[in-house]
Length: 526
Image (tube, rainbow, N blue to C red):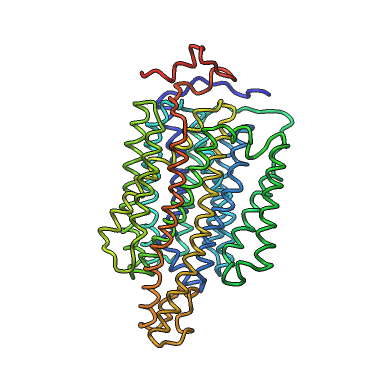
């Protein structure tokens, strides 16, 4: 093992300069996800896609990001973090261009899957680099900057996506092209401002087999969720074959992770109480947030009849909640040095927000919907980033990459599962609602196109009304499921040990002792 470069701790100014590039990177990654949230109904309609393909445009990116996140994190513990960030930007740019050139929904899903590899690198490496620059105790206020950029990207993304698809001389393809110049700017900014030490180790092996088995196992189960009860029954040989294959692949992944020298998901870190509970909470928060929020744009456009731009404006309360909570809670954590109370409060507020959204239908007051979305945003802003911080506080600097990416991996995995499962539930419920409504109106069932037809302009006005009502009424059901999932996050957060944030970049010793003077530093208030 050798340290290729030793550098003095970065000053506040140097940290802010480096953060400028990292925040641009984060902005690009966030916009790539949020810009399609309002544009996707029109994109899928233009490509004559189905509800299942609507879900997989989002799921494909989340799945490949999930699979690649731990690999990026492990590489960050071994090679130049700066170079890895730049490589992930290049991959992201290539995926964005391919997505913008897609000719059908299948090509778009494939391009988004490739783009997800770059997103996985960005979402893991930004956290890793920040952890390598800033001690946990001071990281709270910088997390406020992170939260602010995330909120701007999350607010601006849907608005930008709506404006682009509503502007005739741009078109939906620019939803993917627009991030390219921003990513290129970030590439050059990081080249000039980011200077951190690189740790190299000899005879390193990356656990590609473990990552592949995890991705394959999760993919099989998600494909099963997408088609069960539609193409085949719950109790059928197809279900048994797909579920059995998925579980077998995941069991093999655990076996590989327990025996490989450099696992992508280090079981020794995962078994620690704080890490294990943070992972459970991240899974729940990811499933609830991604799974619920992805379908809000569809609710406003298909369920309520608003334009993409209007749908983007209507999501502002949720993003305002993320922004406000990220900044305020980040500073409160830095001031107090305690993190558990804020995570617990955030997960509780998240449950309340989704419970409020669970009763909405296609006629619910927009004021009520906005208030519920604000609660969801506050819950996400108070918990998501801080779950990563809780884990980073308990591991030595050499394991920061693996630990950070492990939490990001499970959060992204939760989002992938949430989008896929809730999308499948929504499709089934919409199909039932449309079928019953068409029968009650005496309209032939084929006139509605079932839940597969998202191009409402191709439907008769009477059928359009039925389809809109079906989507609006079915959306509340998936938010009820999201509330139940988020409740698991509350329980996990409540079981976490109260731990003061340390004031140093690294642990003072491999095995901290309670009697060590340096180990008492984080417990003191400054």
